[in-house]
Structures are given as C-alpha cells and as structure tokens.
Length: 133
Image (cartoon, rainbow, N blue to C red; front, side, top):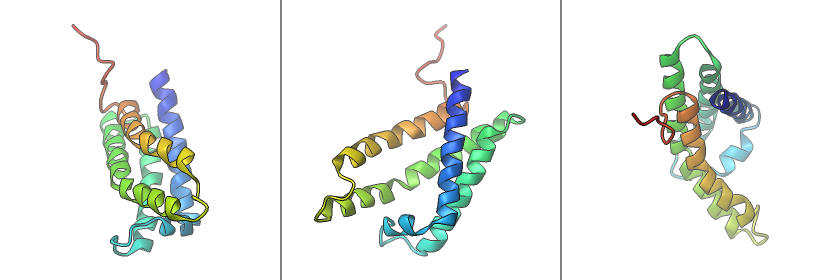
C-alpha cells in the first residue's frame, strides 16, 4: 500500500513538472548549464519524458512497462542533476543569495532519494526491504 501511495505521489510530481516544462520553460532555461546544446529542445523533451514517465508509472496493466518507466524516470533524474547543481551555483552567486542554502541543500539530498523512490515504487528494486530467507 505504501509503495502504491509513493508511486501515485511521484506520478503527480512528474506530471506537474512535465506540464511546467512545456507550459513555462523559461525558469528551466535559466538554470540550464551553458554546455547543454539546444536548451529549448532539451527542456521540451524533458517535459515530454516526465509526462510519459508519470503515465507509465501510473498504469497497472504491465509490470515490465512500469519498471521500464521507473528506470527511465530515475535515469532522467540523474541526467538533470547538473542543472540542479548549476542552479545552486547561480543562485548562491547572486547578491541576495537567491533561494539560499535552506532550499538548495535539501534539494541536493532529495535528488538521490527521489531516484531511489522512483525505482522502489516502480518495482525495479526492493532494496533495502528485501525479505531474507
């Protein structure tokens, strides 16, 4: 039951994020590292990936499909980590400190947790709750 609840929350989170990537790409473009080519296309396709991943995470027909979607969302979260680090650096360089350490430090620690929760709730891993025989 807990796994289902986490999966639903993550699907909502990813769906909202995907919608925002498509409807309001500007904030995402401002935190994109300069070395990323075609930033507008990257933001667009990350929004699509989040929406599709959320839908696949929610579906109850195919467990292999759900696992693939969870793996894709986890990989996505790994790939966007440089943008989060860039956002942290840009914000902290602002005269007013931007959103501050109270926002960025928890966000940095939350990223691996979100990756694990996505894999766990999608049925990719049972770690660390695996039953011992």
